[in-house]
Image 1 (tube, one colour):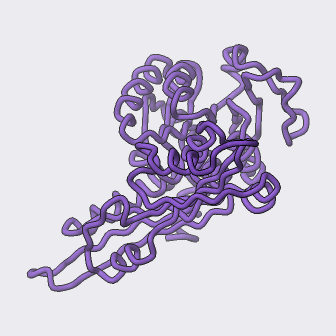
Image 2 (image 1 turned 135 degrees about the horizontal axis):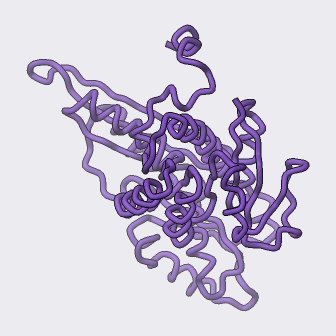
Length: 328
């Protein structure tokens, strides 16, 4: 089996998908599609064409699954339905509140085109979502907690860079250790946003910028920092490049619950991730679900799916017999 993969968008996520394809023997990269000048995009895989997005429809019969690597704010709400009419598609749409609307749009488009679309694939939403579902089903009398970090939040970093006087910045989301330990100890705490996470910002100022004004604007920014204890460090551009060039992330999903006739026994389910590269890990999840999309399409399935709808065996290159023998 050779699953022909297309990549739409060649940033950090697109490059990560390309690397992940290399690690999967049942897949090959067919083409990369970009909004940029294709001549200016240098990919890692030799002999694979880089094409304009406008030419994607010419590849309908040459690509089995198209992995969409755009952003959730403006790209994916338009691109995923559009390309689901032409291809089996995978995306990493992560605006949690808008997933039901996105699902409906992709479902209609994929059914119209006779294809499969799997949306909101990654680690949150994605792997964390699955673990929340498993834990809720197993421990119905319980409480959920999700902690993110320590890791770089690209959205929050972008928000800081939009502040007047800021030349560049990185922001880290950090779980509060005391809150995490309280959950692990079975205390079932009621935690506010501020009690669960802190935010740490490393900022390079434009020449002549007012540091106090920039710090105040960051700390009071609604939806990003105002609900958190936030620390701002002003550093040089050289320090930012030297010490903060990576994109690590991770987090924890926990559920504490009780069983027994009188709820006399306590249990804790914990799932954690520690990632050197957020985009590369997300890409690896996308590629596994591309295999699932290919298998579902081969069975005649159409429409939209999420990670909740995909049987685990569909993610693996191994046969059912091999899985039962080696992993069950």
